[in-house]
Image (tube, rainbow, N blue to C red; front, side):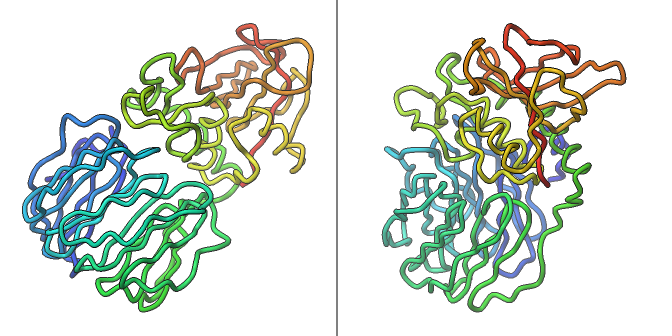
Amino acid sequence: MAPAQAAARTYSAIGVTADGRGYAGISNAGEVYAFGSTVYRGNPSGFSGVITGVSVTASGQGYAAISSSGQVYAYGAVQSRGNPTGFTGSIVGISVTADGQGYAAISSAGQVYAYGTVQSRGNPTGFTGSIVGISVTANGQGYAAISSTGQVYAYGTVQHRGNPTGFTNGIAGVSVTGDGQGYTAISGYGQVYAYGTVRYWGNGDPGSSSQSSVRSKIATIATAQADNGARNLESPTGTKCNFYTTALGAGISGSGVCNNGWRYQDWCADFARWTWGQAGAVTGGLDAGAISFRTYGTTRGTWHAGPGLNGIQPGDVIGYQFGTSGTGDDHVNVVVSVSSTGTITAVGGNQSHKVNRWTFQRGSASVNGKAISGYTSPVA
């Protein structure tokens, strides 16, 4: 099946056969693309949240997909064994055994759900950030989980070999060998870490890391999110349940509040931080507070105080204050364009409960009743 509609979606995961002769990719909307020896069996439908993982059997005769809300979709040689329930955070991954007779799923909070021939060995605890992936051995007697900050948790027949350090843009996933004697991890920037029997071959290409390239990526990503109907609004509206806080492993579990596995908190800073991170900008020191962008810029020399916004460029983040007193920022958004006449367009999260655009003229003291305090530039 050719990925004719791929441009309209975001890919969320990929799974490969044991011999490397086939693989399957899946989008967050559940579109499966099977190649080589992997047999296309169908697409998940009717799920809540987004699709966050896919895993194929050794032969490619079956695969399983999972949604952020825990709905498992088993195809071909994979046996459906059940769906995770009662977790906090969201489900972030799934891994099947070589023959499809078992699988394991994991939540961003580290809760492991083992089915069929996969043996439950324990849950990761004490990590920072969030759990981002799980991988099981061929026979299900071991598995490894990994956090966004690089902490590896090895269970059963998987041998712990070390933790990634010095990476950029968070750790994105882990994969173990069939016998558990080695594993690899990869960062969001494409840095590969190989352990045990896995041989290191090189890093993924993140593209140019120049400041101008990062700025361009930030503007492109932020603009795309404003037009992404699957992500650009709270669900349910008014609850602060949002994709970006969830993707960062932040906020509060939405059980009883959010209807799709998302997490909630004030999220303008989460949107800006996620956008910067996706573009490869340094995000260390940023958190859910709008003021963290001012602190980031002050520490690194990229904070420009005042409403004049002289020198502002796409990729910068503007800070706003809701009141006339105090020094803290209450809101931020991301600049996506600056015209030759000084017209600025900025995209922000948690603006009327969604991701949307504000357009205004440089030199304005305030925008939509929010006083401009200054702007911070990203560090590549």
